Every structure is written in structure tokens, then in C-alpha cells.
Image (tube, rainbow, N blue to C red; front, top):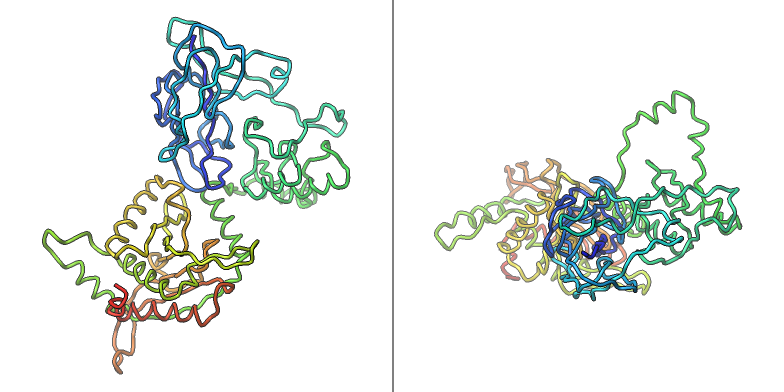
Length: 495
């Protein structure tokens, strides 16, 4: 009979621990090919399609659209091939587990654009035991019989009632045991935790997150909940007392205040918004930043751009944007002031200067603010940078950016002038050392060649990590940027 393989949510890289199911691409009963995308998920980095490394018939799906699953939780089960014997052993593969006999063909790929070596196909027969009958089971969305003539194919694990919370009066022997550093297979469903820092803190102190009742929105487990549990463990309170303490304001508030709190609209900090919140908060906590700014006459830069884009004929390339020109100016400035293309290694107490410039640029999308990265920008001209910015911007708006295209930046360019504002004090994109902010370019009165004239003026703001350089270096960098904006011919020295 067919083997039933369980495909789990793979490790999506970059330290991501969970993903939200945005859209299922297959239904129960559908026939899928090897490496066919089966679900679209949204992580804190990007929206990606996850392919199934097996080919066969989908027998069950785990998780509704809009639900969040941790890495290692099951996504679906697939009935693959057929065989004539039985294997009494048990095992698990890289992407799932099988039952029955026969070799399973698998690509080993777990994410579009990424992959692993083809895993060794292992087989096992799932047999009910007292242990598996007592444990909470993963509940599939649906299951249907195999369309072939053989016996019906069931999901790997049958539905079972969820385990009840541990009470203080329960015997210690019946309480679930926290296992620090447990493998992903030990995860039996999503945990209401958004922040990887909270998970790390709990893991370091041996706190079982499944025994906590979060005090955040919709039961979200916060750092304060884990810290409270850690204190309880240190005081010898035991596992049975690991429940979150009700917030004082929830006990003392008036009836009208309770109604107001219930009617308030709550938006979970998860996905892209949660990732941005964590990164910005960390930047403010760890980086002693400072900001300097200058007004620059961009009239000559705008004229140079117009001249570039007016060149016709078959040799003419795509139009060069103002952002592409500013990006090229940034790479030239970073070559002169490499201190700002660096990061700080806190553990080693070292400043790490980076040889390549991976230039990030802020892009506002329907899903929130994202920062795509132009790789090796120091080796590109303005036209090449502009083409890559256009490609990444289109992918960002369509939600098709991969985690690799959203990480690894060394310097960020933020053009907030598109929102109609002149200036800002940018927050550094941790763990980078600086960010250049660009305001709108507008006609303003300006003294030009000793006379008052109307010129195209822009405000440039540089926020920098004061640990990597002093104000003299930051001021020199920003002044060089402004000189190139006012006199684009300055760039000829570095081209």
C-alpha cells in the first residue's frame, strides 16, 4: 500500500522560528509533483512558496490560512507510491516520515531557491502505543481516502483532545516535563510566541513555553511572562506554578475601563511588522547613534540625470532614477570613508570593517516597510544599481522577496522624500553602522554664485553609530555626499 509521508515546515533560514500560512496552493486529494509549491507562508522576512520534496496524493493538511506554525510542525501528509512488504523498524527523514515499503523518490529541496542534499529515505510503520495514545495529537484540516483501489490512507497522527493546563494541585508526576534544547520533532503545535529573543531566553533557563499563559493580546507570551517563570523556578515554585500573573490594571480597572479595553482594536505585532519592531527596538537599545544633516543644491544633479535619460538610440539603456544616482554616490563615499561600512562585534569588542557594500534601500509596501539589498553595489554603475533597485522594488510590492534578498545589508539608503517630507532622524538598520536619509527635492530660495536664485534643494541626514567613528568622519562622509549632489562631476574621479 502507499507510504504516507509527513512534510514538516522547514527551516527557512536567518534564525526564523515560525511562519504564518497565507494561502494553501493544494487541496486534500490533489496529486502533487516533486518540488511543487504547496503552501504560501509569510515569515518575519518575506512571503515565500514552500515546495513539497515528495510526489503523491495529499491526504491531510495541518493548519488553517492565517494560523502560525513553528519550524518543525507538520504541513501536510502525502501518500507516495506503493509496496508489497512492511518494515518493522521506525525512522524519520529530513522532510517527514514514511510508512510501508518501497523506496521514496525525494528531491531534498525544502524551499524555493534553496535546498539540501537529497535525504536518505527511511521507512516506518506507525503503531498505536500507550504513549502515542496519551500524547496530544496534531489535528489535520481534512483527510480523504486514497483514490486508488487499495485501502484508505489515513493521516500519520489521529486527532486527540488537547492536553489540559497543569493545575497547582496536580501531582508532580503528571506534569509535562520541560526539555531544554528539545528537537523540532518535540513541538506539538504553535506556541503563542512571536519574538525569537523570548524563545531563546526560555530555552536558556529551561522554561517550558507550553506551560505558560501569556499576558499579551490573544494569550501572546511576552518577555515579562518568561522572566516571571524564571523567578518562580529560582524560588522553587516548580512547574505547576508556571502561569502568568494577571496584570494589575486588569484587576483594579473600573467596569467602564474594562469595556473600553475590550472594544479597543488590537493588532498583533507579528510577521513583517513584528520583525521591524524588534529590529528598531534593538537598534535603539544597543547603538549609540547620532545624526547630522545638511541642505544641498541638487539642481546640477537633476540636470545630469535629465541629460543621461535624454540619450536616444538602440544603445540607450533604462532610465536612471535619482535613487540610483544617490546609491552610486553612497558607494563612492563609502570607499573614501570605510568606517561607515562596518559593524560592531560586541562579544569580541571589535569593529569589523566589511570589504563589500551590500546596499539596502527602504521600500514601503502593503505588507509594511521592507529593506531589500543590492548585493556588491560597489562593483556596479548607476545603471546597474538602478535596474536592481527596480527589480527588487517590484518583487517587494508583489511579496516575492526571498529572505536572502532582505538580509545581509551593510549600509542603508532611505528616501523618505517620496512621502513629501524634508527631513528625518533615521534609525539605523541593526547591525549596520549608518543610514543616509534623503528628503524631497523642492524649489527653494538659494544663494547661487553670489546671487539669490530658485534652486532644487534637498536635505540629507546621516545617522551613524558613534562607536565606529567620531563626528569628523561622519561629517566628512556627509559633506562628500553633498558635494557630489551639488557637483556631479566630483564623481568622475572615482569612476
